[in-house]
Length: 256
Image (tube, rainbow, N blue to C red):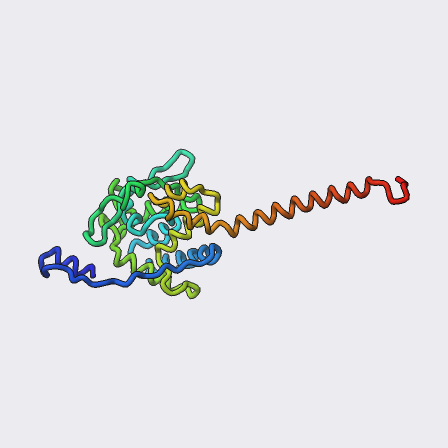
């Protein structure tokens, strides 16, 4: 379909035919399953990218680092969008996305899409290594280039191939598992760490509260676990007080 659209833009054909592309269903699992599978996919993706000689570490680095970002937002990141702080931490400024249809940069889907994301500590060193080895020094250099230190972002087609190869190499990956499902995993983890609705909306770049409510719903298993722990603690204290009260009370014969 992308080829036909490009042909229409180049004037080769009058217009792209109205082909209906079936929507791919989201495949989501429990938190532990998604997290373990994500790590396996990332490990596979690094080796797959090396075989292909395409910006080897960009693919293995970015999914966990910006797991709350869209693929188009990852491809739209430039070196200037990364801000380093005195304490060694880093933040990403999401300001644009790579439009696969036009091959150009455009603004996020909504104003809420313009946001700043903190880079997880576990990814900071990998990010430094990636920038040093794969990204050109210019401010507008793409963080995920099509070639080592290249000036052009990785195409969505190559991105899709790398993702597909890495995903398929992990046997436990369900059929149809998408890169977007990693975003779901990231926001779910964020919610499980206690993020409010406002914080989830900001990190995910959502303008609609109803979209992020599902991530808070996913924390109910953890909520029940904590409630049961609290119940056990209160029950233990009540039982202890009952036992102490019984020991200090006189027996039925009136003796102390």
